[in-house]
Length: 294
Image (cartoon, rainbow, N blue to C red; front, side, top):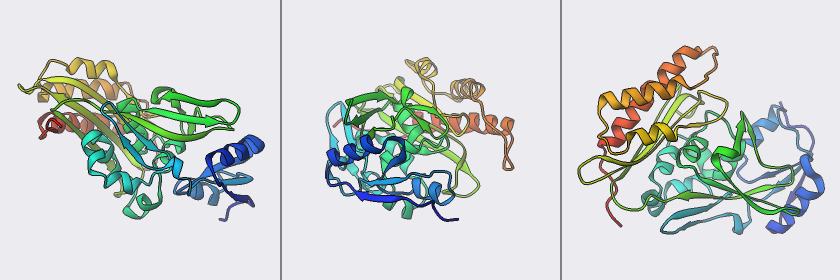
């Protein structure tokens, strides 16, 4: 199929983009990498009357690493983030997730903000944002800037809290200070790069004795939005990540999931798969070589 007719404007600045979104409201869509929006348009699942090209806006690109947070422009290429060694040290789970996103060709064009705004419940970047409780920064002409935690950003499949006149401008990722940070990302798909049947992610910080000081964990592809479990993560604190503990936490997380069924797998299989993947992720992160002190 081909996309429905649409107009196109290349934004000259963020203010210009926000003016266009304010003028056209829900009829306009920002586009940067186009790896999510263009296929939706080709299938006529999305029919914007106007595309606002924000691809060349330098204000929406780049990585700024601070001691407590990393700020990444929404139009930053996924491949640029994936290859940033300093970013990997600051937010290790992000690069672990990026390795599973599509293929190298799609990551060369796709942007972090595009994947998050698309909000596919099987996608890897929304899961990483939910697990780490990233903050998403939105801007509009009328409302200025507002910030949302990931828990309030993802509302339903392919649905976010972004308003019709808003543009996602940046993502703020927390930096876990100190040594002992390790992570793991596990996923199963029919083929690498396909939509995940289920995925699991965790980031763990251990002390010198190998006990968990801090943890974050979640599941993807088994509900309408990515799932994070801060209460289960808290259960790991002060303990060693053993096989029994990992299994207990993973099975409870999977029990809270609400997966669907399709031609590839039914809901019960997906729930079982989620538990297996999260147990593996917890054990990998709990035993992995951890980040040294900066």
